[in-house]
Amino acid sequence: MPDSIHSGHRERIREQYVKDGAESFRDHQFLELLLTYAIPRRDTNALSHLLLERFGSLEGVLTADIAQLTLVDGVGENTAVFLRMQGDLFRRLLLRRAEDRHGRIRLNTPAAAARYAVALLSLSEYETVCAVSLNAKKEVVFCDTLQRGSLTEAQIYPRAVAETALLRRAHGVLLIHNHPSGDPTPSEEDAEATQAVQAALESIGAHLFDHLVVGGSCAFSFSMHAVIGVGGKQADVFSPEEYKARRASPAAQRDLLRVMEPYDQ
Image 1 (cartoon, rainbow, N blue to C red):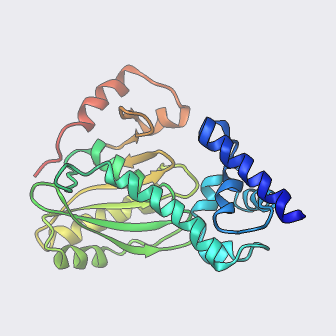
Image 2: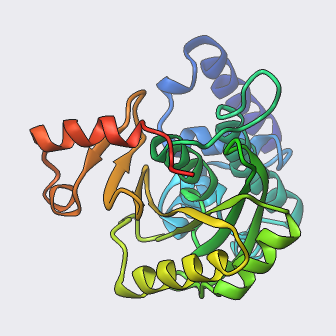
């Protein structure tokens, strides 16, 4: 009889989802329903709580490594792949928003680049370095993942960025990496890496349009020396000091005009 009890519960939460939508669900309920499609004939309520406790949030569950997911009792490889696919699908849909009707992505302003960078790396739990090759129209030619490091560090190798630019025949490059802590404030090492990459690209006749450091729904832009928040429809711009204080100012509004202006060259 336990199977029929679980089946009835599954049916009830599915009916609730159809009737009231995802907004009526708490995170553990949403994950519980999601798990019913990967794990047949088993109560998934306890497992949903266990996963949220282990990875900290729904986002953490859906962006966790497959190998880490399978370490949780009750999660097999098929279930781990199913969960991770949800996170990857969400990220792909975010990136699709940047495409025009011809499927091209133009990143010609810091604001546009910040939105792309956040969509690309905000869900990554490990520090990751990407080089986005752009043509003369500032359209994305290719996005290469150059390094995937630890929770706190990934090395930026200027030579690797330059080699990638040559391989992709890039007019210029957007260098992007993330801080899994959620704080986009750059370190001294980030600033030094920016200068080294810029010199490496100049030596081959290419440009470094920007280096963006992603943290949560924000990205620090080295070209603007400002934090650009892209969580809403319109970008919010803060100086590093203002970002830390989390307060708006008239200066931030003036900066907003600048981040909408095209990159030079």
